[in-house]
Picture 1: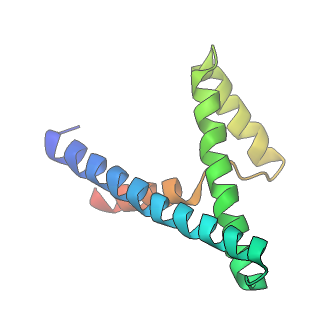
Picture 2 (picture 1 turned 90 degrees about the vertical axis):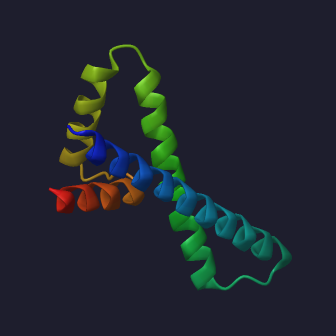
Length: 103
């Protein structure tokens, strides 16, 4: 892999984290509005969706620090797919699509 491609990948990863941070702020704002009683159902659905994305990211991070993670992560992802459980966050899927278009 050449240096230019690595640099593009790192910049996209940085951008996705920054975007994720903005989405997390919006999610927390919506939950605060819900506590105050002024959030709409649509806003709550958006916030819940974002929370699911965050939990997916955290879950994969936990899997990465476990012993035998090079073996356990592919196994867990395969089993999740068999049971139609989505474990990969959407921000990562979008990053992969962009990476594929670079080639």
